[in-house]
Image 1 (cartoon, rainbow, N blue to C red):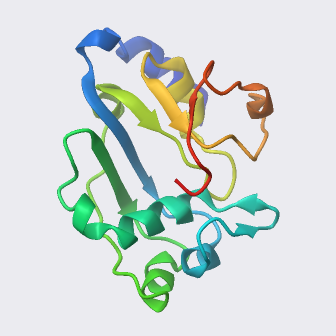
Image 2: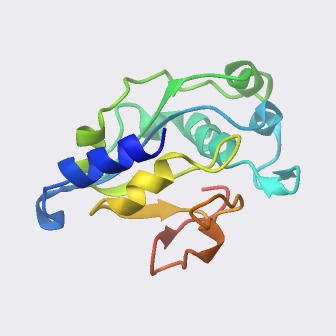
Length: 164
């Protein structure tokens, strides 16, 4: 599951950073606590922030800013899961439209990759760290075999607020 993507990144991420698009990119599904979509910003669940819920809710709160994305930010939900669409509507937000999935090559063409935890650690973090793109993410709250708790802000990634 992890190593196939890692090897693909190492093989395919050949574009020098200077030639990559001036873009921060995120694509993903709405995993994570479905109740997080109706919670006040920054509220925690099970002792940790609800990152994807916060990111998707921020998109919904500011949907007029995100329609068609901007020239420097390309963020989109590829699939609503775990009741997220309904929770956004209940909380008074219009869910953003689903967008198309991007290939690894398309994501790797951006200078910055946004990482957000879902039910667990972000599986995309492993290959993003192997890329030549900069990783933007809140400080990790879940630790796996790659020892996310040892990653240093401003050394291994550019830190973002837990609620984006």
